[in-house]
Image 1 (cartoon, helix red, strand yellow):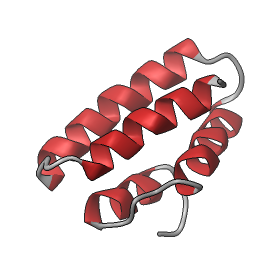
Image 2 (tube, rainbow, N blue to C red):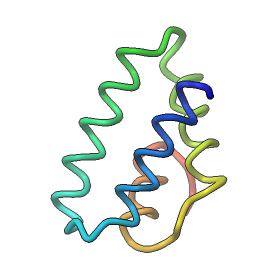
Image 3 (cartoon, rainbow, N blue to C red):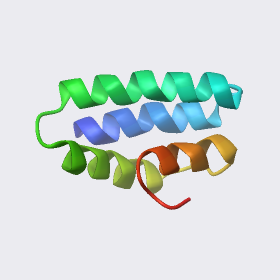
Image 4 (cartoon, helix red, strand yellow):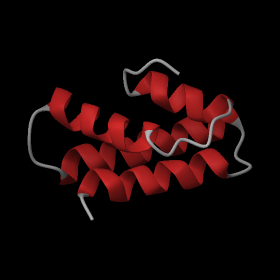
Length: 75
């Protein structure tokens, strides 16, 4: 399993949770920061890999759409 897929799984779980949008975005930032630190490579490539991995399995909903937006995608 790739690092992007593993972190995307965490984001999918977050998007499916009952977290409020503000709390969910705080948790998203923690996951995103950890992913960016752990994964080698350039910022844009890492962000795109995470966006692609998450978008492929996004459960939909407001928090999922905001996560996609934060990753630079179009919900």
